[in-house]
Image 1 (cartoon, rainbow, N blue to C red):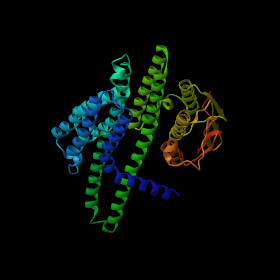
Image 2 (cartoon, rainbow, N blue to C red):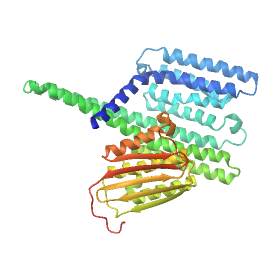
Image 3 (cartoon, one colour):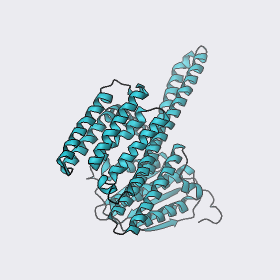
Image 4 (cartoon, one colour):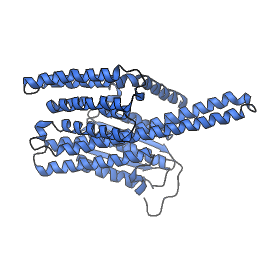
Length: 431
């Protein structure tokens, strides 16, 4: 079963690697088309602005094709002067489009990817990322109609959020580059050692090469899976919380409520950025460094309840005892993802979170009284934040446990996770 699961993971990664180049080439055109379609449905006020938008869309597509799509791979070898001209032209076109029609912020997202992919030096990379963050923030807050008529305060907040995302992307890319170079050096050293031993161990040479290749592939796969899970558990969940608070701020009727929602959004963004940095260094979540699992889960639930205005009942049964850090992280992340899904999809008023300590296992159950869904009728993993569900199941199964989800339309959803442990004596004063 483990071999079949690993084969499926490797197959999915291989499929993604084959599709990745086409995705990066096609994304700008798709996003530009979506934004243009939106601008047609909600056109600018004047005929001149509409004509200008059409001309700029054509210019953006042509610029992307001439400077990037038509260039032969690998495009990472292009000169820094060339990529600076390419990105600067895109920034000017994007800024003009967003000024005329803020919906074109949708098409500006790909500049974050291009800024990381096309630049290698820190200075230019950060400059283009910050410029992109400013353009995105301007469009996301409503464009000139909002900024020039009293709503300018949302622009800096959105700029910081986008800059934080871009900074995390730069950091992830830097870590990946450093680790990739380190792996290459390790592989070179292993190859040199194998060459020196080849005369004495000729009959084992093939086996050594195979083991080295498998170790390298396993390391790459594990790192990709870890980074994917941590990005989802930090940046994705943080962005969901920020968006929720910003939408609530837009709907607030008084300045005090609006300021409160904006402050919460800033707080979530800072916490997400901190967790993203910890993930880069493979550190466990900060709450688990400061407290044990029951206290960390209780604090998480309390904070989530306050932000989302939902009643949460946390129950700890059995006598708590210390378990391995990896198991605590797995259960904590499952709790975090379950609460995030409830906030996004369940429309729930009450949540019961139960942490059960048994002789040879620890169980977590998160039950809500929300809308629920039909698991059999759900089409596509994205219908309910499918990657989050896969990440939860993967975390628990990697810990040797069992994960299950039960839901019925109109009767809520229950997420259950059980991990096997070796019982240890309870710490004095804990329950």
